Image (cartoon, rainbow, N blue to C red; front, top):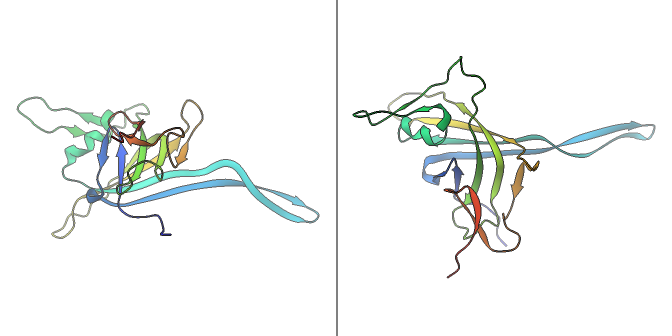
Length: 180
């Protein structure tokens, strides 16, 4: 038996960020605990609630305009003849939050059996570039998992328990695998 690992990609906002553009993907899914103090000692057990549910990934940017797909609500599209737009974080905006399902998939897997999925992720940017002659431009995205309308936050494993499936980045849903 071999350990699970390998090349991964991140699907977010209707696009797939390929492994060749990712520096790393760090997942922090921590269940909370509760303790009770008794005369026999302190006993700690899992609470069944999430204390932390985040995914952090670092992207090598091909251009600043690439961020339009990750932060669409902050993107201002160009008009002719300009070909690129811009993104603005505005102190006057009232709680503007980008939100999207996020799926992490091992590219060598033919299905979603080992995927990691956030139902509703709120996106936070950390842009701290170092401009020099040797490093590519990078941006860190932190995804804070939020409950969806059914209370689901995170899924490890397949999205369909009745058929072989895969996550479709365009529709941002799990679809059956075409096995023909």
